[in-house]
Image (cartoon, rainbow, N blue to C red; front, side, top):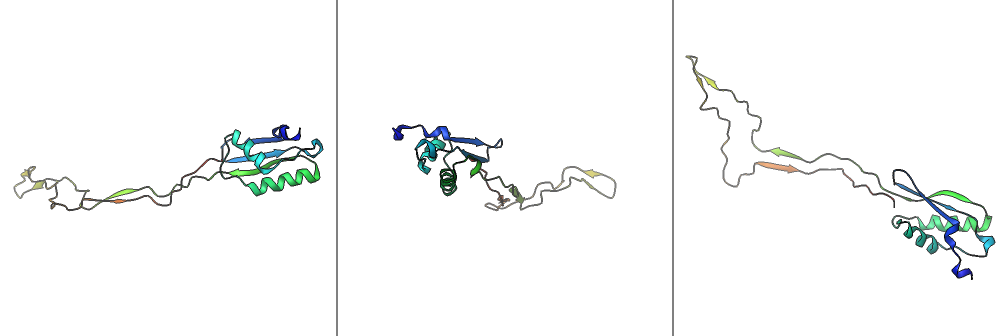
Length: 145
């Protein structure tokens, strides 16, 4: 009969509001003549869609402590997500003068030449125009559950 006993009634899981931490609470179970194993907790967590970055050693220690001392242990941090790190954005480096000022040429007589503004640089075939500088220092975050 102990094999079919619902062990989940002794387990409670809570997830922080930011979904970055998962906490486990365990009620005393030794008086019920059952034994809760780490695998039982992992199966329970899986039903709650929590399956990664779980501290199984801490779960084992918590279960052993509840079994030996027969008291409730609440809010043990068993899983924690990773935070996002925002690094430097990628950028483009122009390999030509991209900051040309459009200024018409004025001759000695005061005439302004709008035709020869020299706003377009000549380039050779296969000459690189732009260099991509990738982003750096970024880390993708991941929620705990």
